[in-house]
Image (cartoon, rainbow, N blue to C red; front, side, top):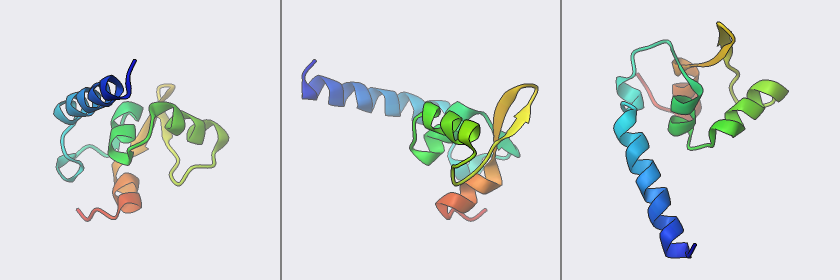
Length: 83
């Protein structure tokens, strides 16, 4: 795959994610799932899972029914986004 094709795939993924998730300022749930937290933090989902496993990331998730849930307020604090 060429660099141009890779760039277009990346842009398409970002556009799809942007359509899928509301802006962080409008998110009103106390926690969000890993895919959404990764979108807001501009990281891969696996990076966040690594933070959870190693307990070494800038924020730590809680576990709800065996799934990771990332506190919306902590994501906002990390990004410097006021509510």
